[in-house]
Amino acid sequence: MSSNTYKKLVATQFAPNFASAIAIVECPIPAPATAEILIRNRFAGINAGFDTLVCRGETPYLNLMPPFDLGVEAVGEVVAVGQDVQDFKIGDAVVTIIRGGGYREYQAIAAALATKVREVSPAVLTLMPTGVSALVALEQAGEMKCDEVVLVTAAAGGTGHIAVQLAKRAGNHVIGTCGSPAKAALLKELGCDRVINYRTEDLDQVLQHEYAQGVNLVFDCVGTAVFDICVRHLAIRGRLVSVGFISEYAHQPERVMQPRIYHTLFWKAASVRGFLMPHYSEYLAEGRDRLLQLFYSNQINVAIDPTMFDGIESIPAAVNYLLSGQNCGKVVVQFA
Ligand SMILES: NC(=O)c1ccc[n+]([C@@H]2O[C@H](COP(=O)([O-])OP(=O)(O)OC[C@H]3O[C@@H](n4cnc5c(N)ncnc54)[C@H](OP(=O)(O)O)[C@@H]3O)[C@@H](O)[C@H]2O)c1
Image (tube, rainbow, N blue to C red; front, side, top):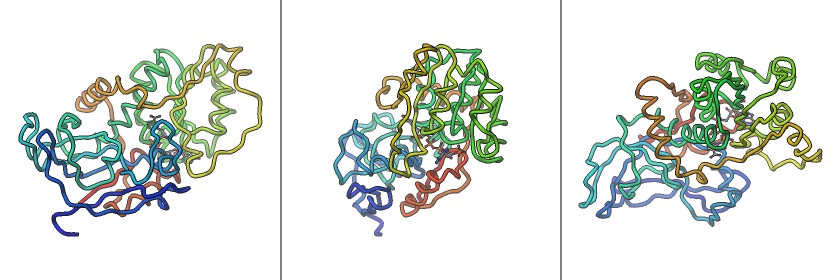
């Protein structure tokens, strides 16, 4: 690679998995247009679920056709500014949340799309947009209250560990599910009231015996059988927010033959809502500012998975790592 070029990941075709859909493309480093800034990305967040679905052509709200750029959130530094840009200078640390703006070493974007942060650190990638999604899903889709029982699945993951802390801060009793003792320890540290390691305890049984009144709010990242159990254990007027269905991303969806869920929901006046952050974009700026403030005042912790992936070439491995369920906290790739 010459010093005038950079690398990015492009989906060149739809394929059953991420690695088969992508190519690394080398491009000239652009000069920013008059209202743009040029950013050197230093870290990008891995969103393996979205990455896989988008590469399969299974994100109907986007209507994408290859080739298209990949990755979303990145943090980096401003390395050049257009002549009309007032608010940014070379050396500023910035975060961006732009579809196609993550898995690349450089990006030239409208200055208005960047957010200044204190330093170029991967921690903010846990908050934006992952943490903001947790916040908006709980508050808007889930109508989170206080003094309720809130269940978070994949609770030690990038999205889940922020959801756990927000639900606790709101004054709720929080149950978190996870699949390892290390993740259980993290959840305890974050204040989770009841941690369920689903590899050693049966989620259905725990809910039946310890939460006979049901769960008021479920933040479900996992889907399939976990979703079914959560629906069964909703309290009267309980709400389940379907934030994702990570257990399906590495496979084709299973065919389900069972009673329709309104048989369960109706008698409890319970509800299930899908959540997709792009459909709640009006809450992004306020949520981002609130989370940053909580983070900078040490009122919220962020967990970054310790396995650091290096360079554009490592992104398929990072995606597979997250889909394998091994990660604890947010998975991040760094660019030299
Ligand atoms: N709707 C939105 O706008 C939005 C925005 C952000 C994220 N999301 C969704 O939030 C969920 C979490 O995303 P994330 O990027 O933060 O990932 P993550 O939670 O950091 O990682 C995924 C975790 O899922 C858990 N998991 C449980 N069952 C699994 C299975 N069968 N296969 C693989 N993993 C399993 C694993 O932990 P344990 O096994 O320990 O539970 C794994 O660590 C995803 O469903 C994602 O699509 C949605």
